[in-house]
Image (tube, rainbow, N blue to C red; front, side, top):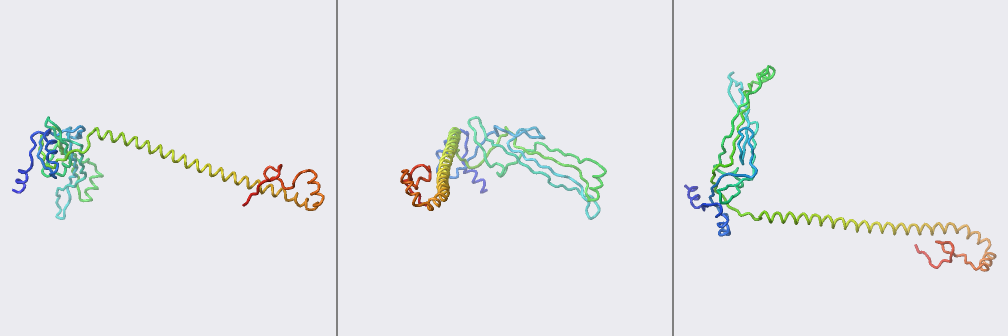
Length: 267
């Protein structure tokens, strides 16, 4: 009785095209439960393997049937579930005026799928397999495959919460296009940042290399002048006078080794 009273209070939508207006009028009422009717449809229906039907929800089960030997010495029939699989595609109800998508129908109460196909495949007979099964106390009978389906075109009434889609297809396309441009822009900025970092690192390495080469030239020049200085010390008096006469100073540039130095490197 309680469920019947609840169903009586649910808003009945005569035509699916009126659902959008009802949602706008009742946007402050959450949840907004309605009753709608239409025919099951889908843009990508499932083609059933055994029955050949086209449906939106397909359940496949496979049961292994066998005889087992009990303690009393008699054979009793039993079965074991081998496979249980369910497929579902996006689907909607259509009454000719509009379409309404249905979500979460697999867990709905009262949804009973039609049996589209029921096939029994007998087990192959062989002496070796029969002997092994007999030693285990089993006799394999075969596999029973059942295919349950919610076919397209089925007239269906659904009671549930109505929710308006937040994004229209055009808005979704626009967002996809913008996200693509943002992706390209981020890649471009990343490449530019990598270029700046590589440029700075290259300049730093070249500067360090130049300083190292200058320091090496200074050390080489100093090492080269050491024997000359020792020779000059032995001839201090004559060397100084000769240098003065020639107009050249003994302290020349350690870089070019040609002109008089005018600066000092401080380590």
